[in-house]
Image (tube, rainbow over all chains, first blue to last red; front, side, top):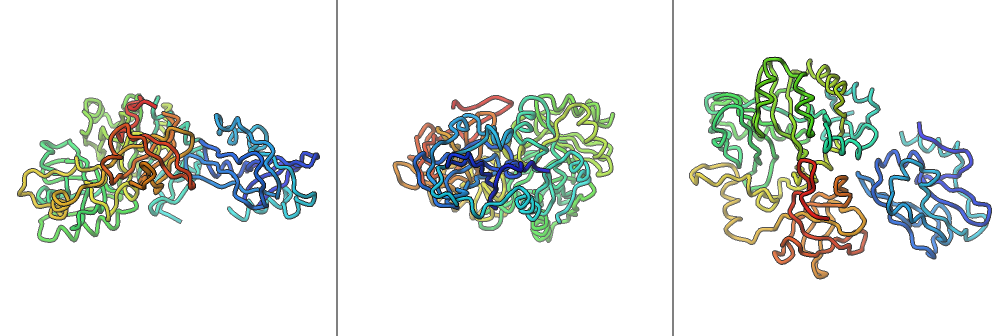
Length: 130
Length: 367
């Protein structure tokens, strides 16, 4: 059973989104995603300052098994990236919703989170995949 | 749903992540592929490899048949209890499969072939056997475990049939001992010491449990792949296949050209190829920056494509990415050459190294 915190929003492609309340969001991949990928060994972070449209492929996580794209859950500008993942990509496995965050976006518009799933809806996405 | 080994329920009980592999439902890992990898390099791990297919080749013509069927020469197996690695070729010199062939007794051999190709291999062998006085028998009654790592043999010893223990512990690499329906070989696919054990399917549950109780770590196909890649061992279907000959895949050392009068399947095509063209070079690559090399990525030298990665991945021992690659240009294949690999459209720096990265727990290259 994977962990799906109630206070986050989610995408179909298994990113989580935390609204920081200041016009920015933090993005990572879900517990379900890290479990499916297996041990992570490399993260290619997006460039700070890059403008992203929702669903743009913007980062890559590579596990021992395969490479997997990370998509921008919402439109915005990359303002911060988690540089620590360069040395310790396995943090995503051990703490996907905390220290394993990947990047922060400054939202392009305030309605940007339309179309994201809540925890219950995302649970359904995970179950439908099984 | 794929075929299941006799240990399927045991894998489920250990929370294995099960994946389809060559028609089988097999454990990929039991939680952490990296931890399993390190267990084999530092202690001992056990792999359920019961999906692999042992085939008994018996009868008066067993030896001449295998000398015709295989590119390596079973005549090198001077006495029973020895084993040899070989490719089985088609008439074009392409690789039908790779295998280890055990010499069990006069007129009795046991090649062990890959799971995904087992049906094809059996058909191929039976077709080639026409005119030879041999029997070819699938040994579906056997299970197989690979116990690998520096402490693997010592931990496995007390679990072997009493009649086999002393003989098994005295085995040299690529030798095997048979008894009580078991075959214990000092072979493997990890670059570590250890045993591969074939035994009656009914006995495998007890051996598996005994190994786990002795502290041997259960390991899945994921660790098996990173271990064999570090050891520079080939994976059929990836590093070579029916369209690739062994000379182009770094397996020239497994082709036995002597004696010249031995006619084996594929010999003519291979000989022509050896004499005619400049063959591709099979090399190792070390990515000198962060990232992960993967199969089919292009290798560039001075900006020009010169070859392709056949197997790539992350080396847990070196904490770098490594790969096996086929390089067409001799100038780009020399050890130490700085090349680049195209990863998602970007040229990332890599170095040509010997295609054997880790053996017996120790790096063989400098990162």
